[in-house]
Length: 450
Image 1: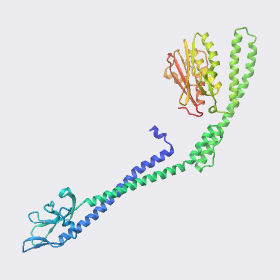
Image 2: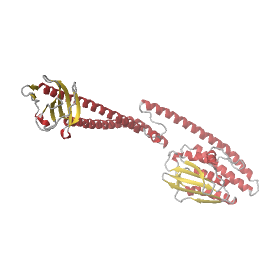
Image 3: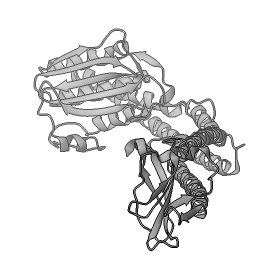
Image 4: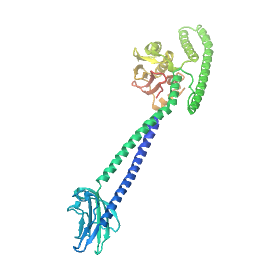
């Protein structure tokens, strides 16, 4: 059922037409065959009845020899040819039997009927026969005489079979013609939709800002509505960027003041405070730059993961040593990820920060490439999470342990970055025993997440 829902419009139309033809054409063929069979059989039976009347008209009683005689020819030499399949017979049900020469020493079964009856039976040599018969009275005989005329059905059956073949070939050809015609109609009719799809791809890739409205009236209204949505989203994004920029600017002054005040604090606290303020300042600068940018995550370049993440791994490696935790990393030298460099640093930094916060003795980060994208995986040997917790922790601000440090936004921020770049985020049980966070990012821009 899910496959049917994913069918394209063209496939749906063609499938619906195919089902209609698969039902309608056989019904039409059956109706035509039935009509022709009835008509042809009726005409065949009328001819048999005419032959029966000729046989009855030529029947006479010879009083001198006290026997039945037939004084009229039926006009068809096949009644004279032995076992030709064309027979007539007159019988009183006893010893008096008068038959065509074609019957030779064979006899047709007698079944008395006051009215004219037509039936099928197997004749001499197994030939299928069409028999017409009736009872008549002939003076001076006391009893009725049974008159039968039988003709081979082979000619009739061959004609019926020939008509059936012709009808079948005609309907198959008609069905193919209708399918080809409909396929051309569908292609022509859906051409405006393909134009809309091409315009959407151009909008996604940044090559255009609006959809072309020079379309059929129905699609033109749709394109105008979608352009309205695009314009509104563009205004909202501009407003959000301005708001983020204003916030970043508002934070720069307090950060500068705090940096100055840190100079009056004794070592080593002064260095630690200045390092943390420097990280905050770098993050503010980063988000200010992002807020001022007009690009989209789908246009991000592919960056070398090992080079971009070296500062993050070095800094968090020192933090891990102070906590007595071993941080191991396995990132291929040629691994490239389609993501802004600072976004990648923020993503991995949040994952490692969260892992170090919960780990007991070890954290691992691995990466690699597969068909269509790149993946990163961070594992720890902490307490881990059950399925319900994994779902809940992705909610922004969710906290599983309020006694642990941190604001609980790490994985939620990671989820936002992954979604922004069209990737996937998965939480599972780690091989080390704790939590495993796997991120997959597509190589192609605007590839939707599953």
